[in-house]
Length: 578
Image 1 (cartoon, rainbow, N blue to C red):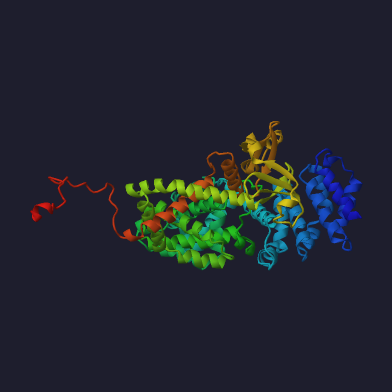
Image 2: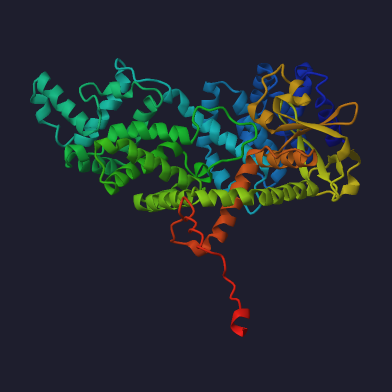
């Protein structure tokens, strides 16, 4: 009875007629008690967690109340159960609390999660579980990763203060760790001028551009103090690798030295860009790195692997100081190509990124360049244009087949992702759109079970993004960019009714808007159309040009020979007979 009551309450609140802030403290504490009790039914706990998740972003007062009443320990207990739905709801509330918290509160919460080894638990029991990872959980893991990485933003955007004693000591520790054997006893006997000269020389060996005042190198933000933190972490946690890096380059010719400090600063910036540090969380993204959850100090450990990769690539390229930007460009490519493989651990990342050496990168680039050059020859371009209509028709058929198969859509409000689902599909004869609400867990309902219909002939136009009525209604609040990019509407009938969609992914958005444009007799306009067309053209061209492998294709056709002096090619037998 309690479960049904809570579900009915959730249904009513989803209409947004009443604000969550009007709820009494007694009611909220009652909901919290269901979350904190051990003997209550699982379905009641799931609904209670959902209600609290809706409350948290509504106001600061509700956030503080929920945070106070539902401890992190209790949430983590729910997260560690075997029931996947309860686990999902606990994760949803945890993410809602993290997003609504201030920077200081978020930092404290993340520190507590680190103490409890939650990342390792997620890595072992959720990511590598025998059960498939759903879209909702994938999104929450992405947000948790993004929130954690964004804790680096404050240091990334803070320039070094040359008057800060703490920062100066960190900088000096880099020099002392690398050259302590050289500068132990005698340095104390040197004059101030001599000691300053010795320090400048050592900072130059460390790869600082401004060796007399190395703090100047760290004034650029980003990467700011984050670069210094990474260098100090590398020197303290892998002292042998650090000393080897510095001393190995100190013994090379000046122009062939790989500058440690300069490389570290640029590498930190590259990693921040690749991992989107400081960028707001997307409302729909699901892309997370499994290896992130297997390591507490992920960013620093990743830096330790990549700075050694810089030195390795520098040697492979036989680089000089003038090649610095080229080397870091190759390193960026090595990192991004390896991350795209989604390695499950940092050890696996290290193995794969080191296997992708400079010669492998050159081979990949050459293959891609040859493919590009081959497809840019004039005769090939002409062939592409001839093939386009046939392949576009093939893409149109695929889009209509996808619409016939149908898609599950979620009803999303400005507050949060909702559990309400509805399904839409096109009839096999392409004449009617069928749609209707469905329950959780139903993936492909038959057409007969979808009560609502829209005849294709009644469809007037397709609206996308800000033009959609369900986006205009929410224009008073700050509309999330990701939701705007996934919104589209069908205007139909003489009364100009609208059927409003928010696609689950960008891929579905492209397929549906293309398919609807085909039904309306218009061109397919999505970026996916161009991608699919390029892939199909590439495959078709390769098949047609198989016999021309290793034969250069001329840019202009060969000249047409001159016509013969006469065209009397037929032998006249009548003269012979006479």
